[in-house]
Image (tube, rainbow, N blue to C red; front, top):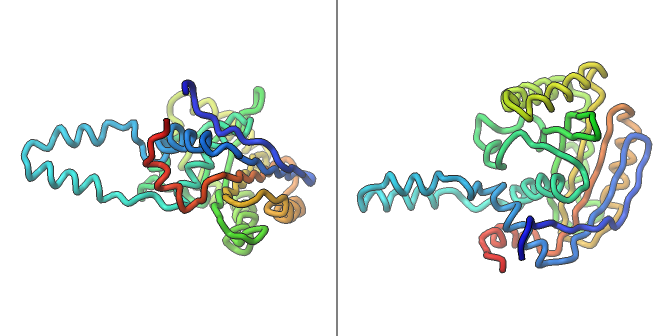
Length: 265
């Protein structure tokens, strides 16, 4: 097969209330999903395109150094299911949602180092729509929970609460803007930053896009998102926009770390 791998989801339900919309997207083709994971998600989470490993091997000039170097490379643990879920969410939102989304970092690992971690939210980037640009703040939940909606959507650590915090707490927004500023010093991100932040300031912090992404390996159900969407619609009004998206995937979440290592024909 040639060309860029696509996730190829189909919308299986949708709904909305005032400033909030929600949709479920089902991926039925297992082979297509595996190819997307291998070609799009794996470089995002593992940085396999980096020359780091080859450079490190070139610097190990003795047998002992080579042995130590191999131990060093193996010291990085396999990504957990939720880590893969976050990388998958970034890739799905950018390549499968029909939205033009820009992330100001190269890989998930770029924001997993202690000094690079995102403050207060899972995702921060830009959403371009025609000639306008919005700040995008997002939360990702990954769950195999058989209940509907899954527990990760509820309570003080649930998606709705976290999105509300991102929309209303100025300390979180300040930290996100500062984090974003340091990563948008060159084009094309500088232009996106200026347009989005200018719009945000003009609206007194209200004009932004909040995205909640739910990653599932269960049967699609509109109940996964509906109640959370309705709750948010009562708390956050326009011009703030909230979009909740669930992707339902054909391979169990527990198998994703192993899947990333497999070669796909």
